[in-house]
Length: 144
Image 1 (spheres, rainbow, N blue to C red):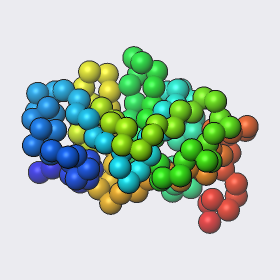
Image 2: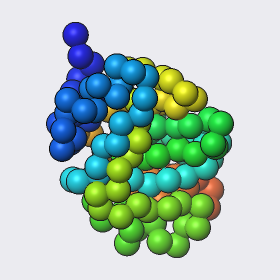
Image 3: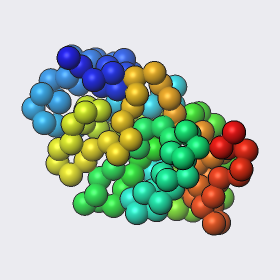
Image 4: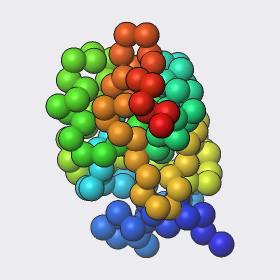
């Protein structure tokens, strides 16, 4: 049975058969970021930022490559205007291809720390900025 997050990733692929074939051969497949934005960040700092976002129920998918010290956050569109003043973050342009494994697998040093849930939940770029900003804390209203 296919993990719901894997099915969600496949739904964004122009050719899901090619993506599935790559994954079956333990290769990364390019998934274009259409309908969401990819934000690249250092791994360790991403691990620290995940905690307050998870506590507030605001954590979307996060892919990491530990050897490269890179994390890729899947966030709602509009991230560039909210994250431009945070130099440790790189907002990738629309359609940028995220080279990833399926949601439920880890290979070649890359895997999902927070898997896509299959429902399209993404991290809010404003809250991501707060988690990466000075103090790394979300405002109290983020916790309801």
